[in-house]
Image 1 (cartoon, rainbow, N blue to C red):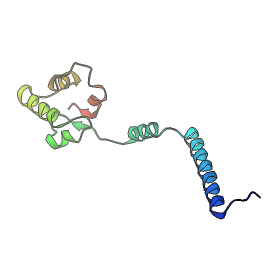
Image 2 (cartoon, helix red, strand yellow; image 1 turned 90 degrees about the horizontal axis):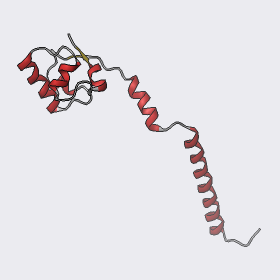
Image 3 (spheres, rainbow, N blue to C red; image 1 turned 180 degrees about the vertical axis):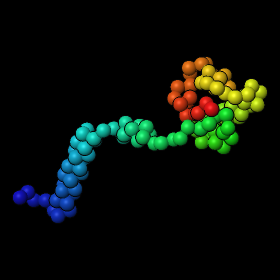
Image 4 (cartoon, one colour; image 1 turned 90 degrees about the vertical axis):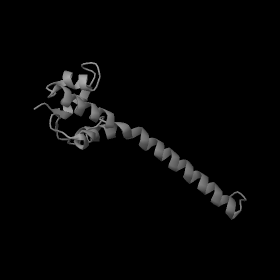
Length: 112
């Protein structure tokens, strides 16, 4: 064997183990699906009951994803001024968005 001290052999062994660990992790991440894709699948599986938009209070509206304090206030003020919100176009008007620009947000509500 080459004339290495015990400390040098330990350092060389450590370097080889780090290299092996790095290559192993690289192989694992190459094989495993990306984390964001897995999280999107999990997010799609989460059950969220639909909110009755014409009866929901401020706190209930805040629980809906993508509805913040300003949007919740706009919905409530629109209901006071115009009555029931009966379809996604009326919701878009309440939120001051273009019709059809709501995407999946309109699927979070019941229109009764």
